[in-house]
Length: 260
Image 1: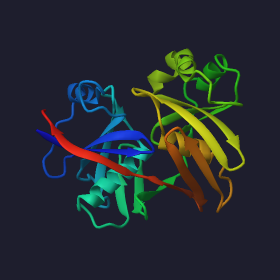
Image 2: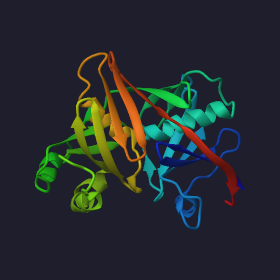
Image 3: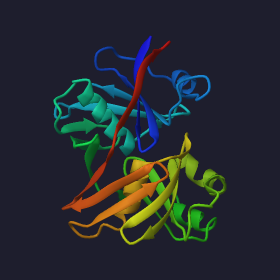
């Protein structure tokens, strides 16, 4: 039997398994079986918490999409993973330094189940004439950033009635092989409304890394802050020197166990 906990960050839901005490073998068959919302547990991503491979880090966290593919980063997920660690007393309730496949991140507990994540600014990417290929398929302004996973961020005048699945299918042959997630957004003042289609998952209620990529594009000065709003809730981003602080909720749902 595998013990797990179910958590969510703004509706972006996760099954968390820990390999700190007993190492759990994670494979595609296991992931796809328990990710099924009708026959399994159901989740956007599975999180596996492991011992670090570097002496200066506290934990190593891995993220897997519902289709079994591995993701480099999930910022809604890392808040939930940190809260799992504190709630289960694997570490004192103070800042922890987390190692992931792509980034090292500091997570700090706040009041009311909130967690603040400290992370570097995302990097621009434009591989394989990608920008040209995208321009040939859409008429909107866009930019592309990497924050441990890749995001294509498309500006829209309105996002509520847009067929996001149709936009993704139009771009799928271009972006899926490069593991690029797709977001559409509308900005008004310091509020950004956003919808995201994540590779290997589909449209999610919230995507922390997509929200960060879009917010970062407008955080040019120290002290500036932006708020993103998705179907699942809100996240707050603030520029402090050369890093971004992201604050958002991490909510426990239930715990249980499932056959391997």
